[in-house]
Length: 313
Image 1 (cartoon, rainbow, N blue to C red):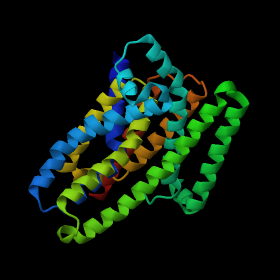
Image 2: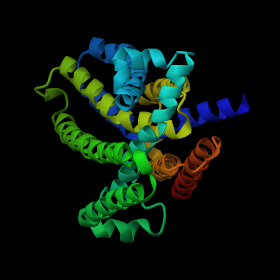
Image 3: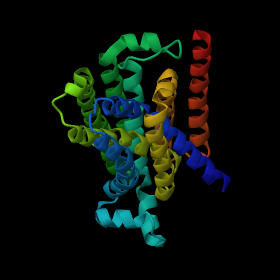
């Protein structure tokens, strides 16, 4: 019981912190809306969509892609099924989910480390950022090659499906990153134009929902490092999404002030991706390690942010 509670707490914390960028964008775009009706629609119905549709469907789709023979509806049913054969099929596909998710999360963390502007929370971050995108692509290519070689040498009959899953995780990262970059450019235009933007308020609501879907992928994929029990993922990520919406409305300025939280999110993402990769290769990792490590990493950078704010005050 304690282990389950720990997993849910870890999922909530991870969902909130990994989606801070999403909350900031939501707040900025909401501030440009003229219609109070559109704003309230997003804050109420948007929560329901984010919790029950986005975070309900994404885990099902991940299970479906790992088990295409059971179909999309079958994947959704499998989340709640007690049928031993269904449970065995999902368990057998777990390494595919783990290696794809691990590849995705490690690339996400490396991209932040090598490419993205940031507040420097650790001494090595500044020199690593100077290496830039060229080094990121080089390291990403070496990572994929290394995983393929390791699979070829030790995965036996599972080598081919695992290699395909790793390649899918690799490709999925670059696809979602492209969506995020386009969304960031659109956000800049919306904020620059303010209330004079040519985009209607309802179009902005649709934009925010699509953006939420893109950002949700990180949290849902990372959740599989905590547990492969999908109902637990729905509970933890769902509560985290509700908390995030409340922060968007009431505490966004305070969240912005914790300047190292993004660092904590990205290091925990890198750690969780590594855990998923190890488990995909058959290494046993205690189920408590992922939530405890994520909470400790995020807690360290949260405390660092608080101390920095006190020093500045």
